[in-house]
Image 1 (cartoon, each protein chain N blue to C red):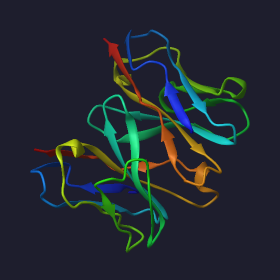
Image 2 (image 1 turned 60 degrees about the horizontal axis):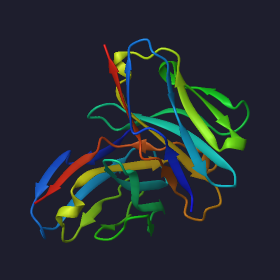
Image 3 (image 1 turned 135 degrees about the vertical axis):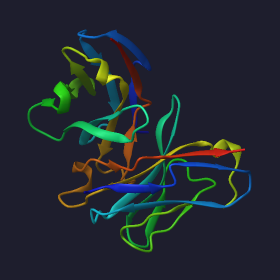
Length: 115
Length: 116
């Protein structure tokens, strides 16, 4: 079955530290990949997405992610985090051809940035 | 403003008392879906709808019903709520033009349901 794994459930960083959140998916077909962010008390918002082309995609607020097809990975990065990046981050996959027309989410990673 | 609107934001109820959570989107999206979010489990899909009068089960449909009589509305119905349905619920929609799998989801603000 298709699945999305996020390596860390909780991450604590100090401001200005670099961030990398891991995401791996299991699906052999064509995939479209997303990172969503959920700020405290808010709904999920799109951070960035990958469909095709350049495997390094840039999103809002200085975030970027790299798609490595051979590793089935789509890790999220930011060179220097801010206190306002405190949120929960979800990796997600739209898996074409599953027949179920669904987006599969990882369990999420809670990021806390210390000021 | 393009948005997905859910109501209510917070709901406390008792076991067995039927309730409905409403969801409406103003983006003319064909696809709508309901998710529940639980700590450590991420978002799990309850039901989804590809278009009016077309609905299908997601991963955790037990204890829930949905209907899609109009394109903009997709209510979630709990006929007899139980404590294990205490959760945070999100409605979402997605455009279908250009291929559904290319489109991100647009989420509502969530409904925090507590069943005692």
